[in-house]
Image 1 (cartoon, rainbow, N blue to C red):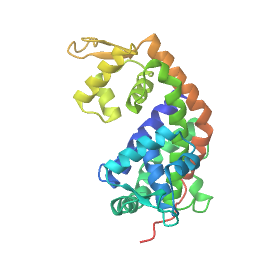
Image 2 (tube, rainbow, N blue to C red):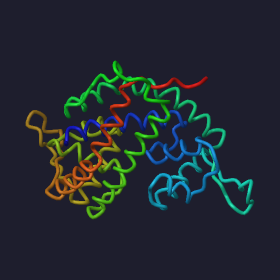
Image 3 (cartoon, rainbow, N blue to C red):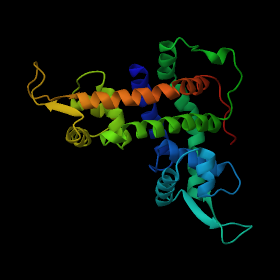
Image 4 (tube, rainbow, N blue to C red):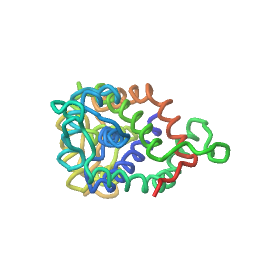
Length: 268
């Protein structure tokens, strides 16, 4: 299960890059993408409606809407039927971003198929559904289902490690990566797509929480290199995340399998 989650975190980081690039380096978390797709699906939508339709907390929706508004991707307007009621909609910039995202997703699903196939093989699942299945649907629908499952896992995982002082996704990703064994900060930076300074700050933060230990000169072949590994507390936090992942694993694998099949091309 650990190796599966390490692979899927890498897949998630790559998907976030695609989202961010399509949205002009705007918000790129699962919930941000889901809200933008929900607003593009048509019909009047309110923040309370998003809480109900997405199945996430009011605070999660509020934080995401704040990010999307700051990025100029979402705005509030008076309802046509009731001017006292504010409804949400994607801005012109947000709609352009969704259109770019739709065009980029086909390439992403193709490029990411090696990771997905490796995960499928780990679980004894079919790795070539495209030969036997028709289109799995428009790429945005496939993305929406993927983000839905991902958001459910993130909500669960976040709650499972709050007692360890962990709140950021990058902290969770780092702990899962380090559960494989000791690592150089540079390897952690490569995996998480961080700058050297960003990786140093991350390690210092986790060290302050008692989740990792760092030893300068820990590599016998090069005493200038530091090594980082999980403490007992860090292993406990990782075990909690793996338990949370286990509750969503089957649903996630089902959605990932659909990305291996053909998806409908965007209408241009």
